[in-house]
Length: 160
Image (cartoon, rainbow, N blue to C red; front, side, top):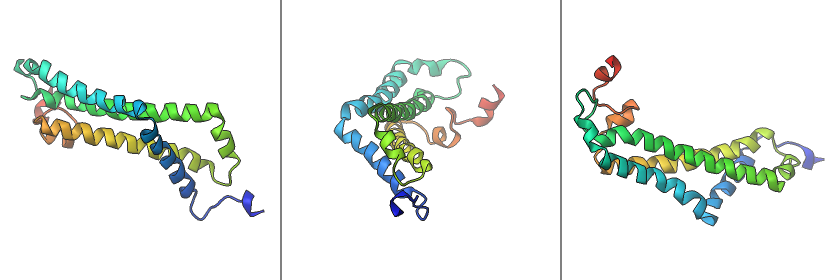
């Protein structure tokens, strides 16, 4: 009888944590699925900020550093690729019948959704932190991160 009861004391956090760790373990087991999604934003920010550095010479361009303009794109790309990787892993689990077995487990359905969400969030944070650190090393200003935009002069950006 106790095997069919849902563990309400932890709210299914143990199951969600287990699913998240299982998904994150796949990074180590299948690095070919994670490394390209991590390197692509890094390559983009390095190549675009160097190649299109002349765009800052346009009159009225809101920043004097091209890295400030391209870094938000690369950060968003890294987070998006991380979410896609987790989505593909979830599709693989659905097709293999793993989630059919989990639905019979004595845990809440919420935990079955929370686990992959936590894994996607963790993968996204790895990409965001790596790309942001590389951007800072290349000379991005802190205003990019604080304002969420590409300018150190927010009043000018709002007027345009």
